Length: 297
Image (tube, rainbow, N blue to C red; front, side, top):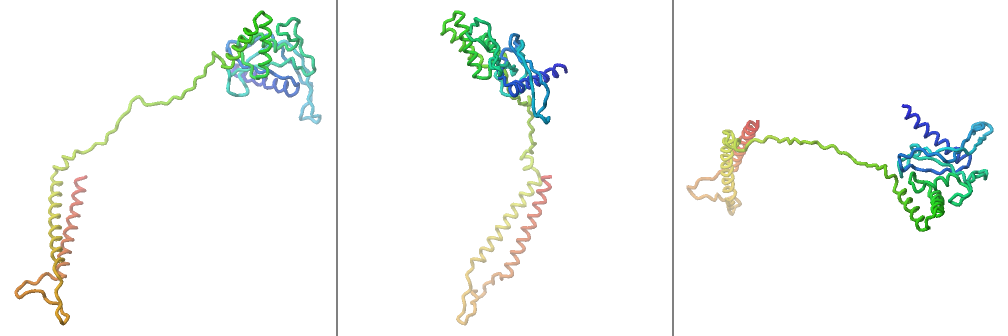
């Protein structure tokens, strides 16, 4: 619990320091992101100690007043309170740029500094550790200044210009790749059952149905019905093919029958036969449906 509270307090303090330094004191800050997770805190930089002397933008005076001074401090990495895609471990630190003190009184460097600069203590500190790849300087403009100072330090230590340039370029490339000790692997896990159960719908064998007595009875009834329909159809076809009777000169129909020949069916008789056949066929069909339903059950 204490660790969680400490983490939040450190983040809030970093946000407050950045707000005061940039917005009220007009002191630029250099943002570093940790690359080596073992390097959590380094001594030797200049930090700003400030305090408010009263006043509030909500008061009638609408004024704020601060006083500050440069003191020895340390670089402390904190989980980034401003979320963004990380280039390293995601932990950041803020280093104020003492070379741009708004009063014009930049912190002077000791005589004989290998970078050849006369001010900018924190930039000198960052340049002296640039080849160790502890962190990544987020602002590209500040990184160029630090690289130039690192190059001058190497040359004044006896390195050739080509060798010094190569070493600076190598560190820049390594820092651009991010933290070698912090690899984030993201993968999606889909749960798949280890075993599968196949459900088979039971089917009745057709041979059992075909050999059933009711099924055979239905087949026999269907055959009888088929013969009856063919017989009625043939009889109706014969009647339809009979020629129309010839008319007598006086307009009356000729009988068309010879003496002693049997007279054919009348229209009423044919309709009666057709009606009986249709009723018989419908009765057969109803019985067939009843039998089919019993068999399926």
